[in-house]
Image (cartoon, rainbow, N blue to C red; front, side, top):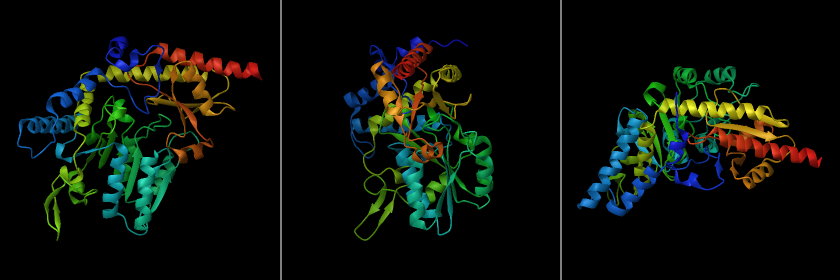
Length: 405
């Protein structure tokens, strides 16, 4: 299968910077020109607030904004666009669910399960919801092989948790959750299922109906779209039953000083002026992705990450964490005896951008018995030459250490 990575790279203005090797895509991806153009077009020609406006600019802005919702519903194969809520990202989506759904379903003695490699955005909102309700948040631990522990998951499901939150692809490790088998198990236990798709949305073709989850959340800036925008999709019956999360304009039906009633979906959960340009930019990113040969992109990324894994495994003094052949997007590693930030600074001096730290996954770092890791993460526009440059710079660092010793 042919794949022209040079042609794809030419669509991303940021990548034209001399000497830059950008391998920090799990934190945020670069944006193609079509996304930048879509947002600039809105501000230059159609800038107005959406809904209820009586003038042509508002009508055009509303069509573009609601058209973006429809585009993104198709992008994840959602059955209805009304159940697609715009948020500021996966973090706000998880907070919305923990506050609204949590208040509706959690009570004293209930449990919520969250995988041990979850981002803080999945852990902390549900931790606080559990505290308010008198419920308990329990981790699904890693096994010795670095994958989530199936036997432990089965034991935890036996207590019939109310909510199960699963991360489709770990942002810190790039490892995959076995959703194909784990989601049916959670449903059989009577749990409401929530998927953090922040990392998977750029690397997999997402079909929420085929997944069979109750909620799915993702962020725009991980999938070549703008920052400050994301999506929460959920089952219509659950969203209809959930109380509003924030209050103000747009989400109301009728207001008096005695009482207020609230709007229908999706507006019930979209208080205030939305991120209009960002929603339009995110839809442009989704259309850009859908216009590519997705299977070719996936095959390219898979081969690239496997090449990086093999090259890293050849180096002395490198520890890899949960580096499997089916990893997607990211690999975590450390240079033995070295602080991860020192490695990152050295690589930056060579023009290599990676991420170093706990990756908003401190419980995972505790489970791995490390303070943090280095993380290489790829996108469709990365190439083997960039992996080679990364390996060469890392090799120089290791050799420098040995020479200095």
